[in-house]
Length: 394
Image (cartoon, rainbow, N blue to C red):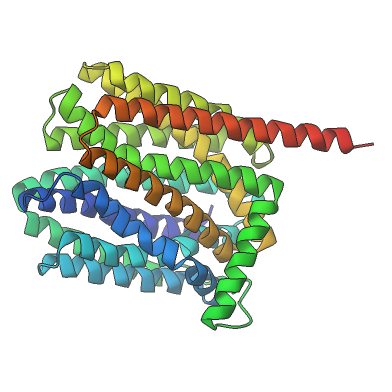
């Protein structure tokens, strides 16, 4: 790893720090406005809708220009959304603007790794990237818990300055050759091109498995934030601030799991971590039996560690296959489209369940069963495909 990689890492860390601090500050702002409790997960829905709508365009955008420049423009959009919230725009709409910047940022952030580093370094680089992102989640969660309790306006100003700092760091990201530049830039062509890229990645054996798992994982991870916040208030009698700190525990677990995966799992063996996903679902179900905060912390630490160990290798595999098949930016855009469809679907389901006053323990058990059964199905599919491939060999 050289200085260029660490500049990328630093820019990502500051941007992710601001993203996570903004989420919890926006939740605090909604509580201050006495908005209904189901507005909390709706924040995430407003954020991810841009990933879905803009998916055909942001990948081509990331591949058409130097990715450092794309990251700069994306952070500038986040800055605008954060500034709008400072000046009184409703949190749902302002967070939606930040989502537009995040949707454009992601293909460049991950895509630059495949262009800047050799395949042999991708799992390690992803481990570093996920580890730094998790540390940003930890610090962002703390900032999002402490600063709003002091003064929400001060919290918003600090977050806006962070976005500005991230944009400045983006200026110093090394330029890499433009890869897979689209031959046309018309909306019709880009939509057709995106559809072709989506089919290419889903038809690829390794791409299909890794895309299915990452889609499930990020949908689960986004929803789990709100499940934990609600569960901590019910089962542990935690305040909003105390509940927020539990997300720090999950994030620390993800960091440990990411580091372990970066050191222990090779790119060609990425799919071997699939059974870990089944265990994650079973541990989530275990939350419904916990009423002690120490046991809760241990359980959430384990859930985070196994999740990090699962997603880092499969993320690297997906990036590698996508880079070879359709280009780095296109690949991440397809990944974001699928993952955020998963997030939108699970967040919508969770929002409806909260609005219908369904008991949190029933939600947790349903959630955990869904994870375990889905991961079991993906693992069986992977084994069946491997068996078929071996039987076809002479």
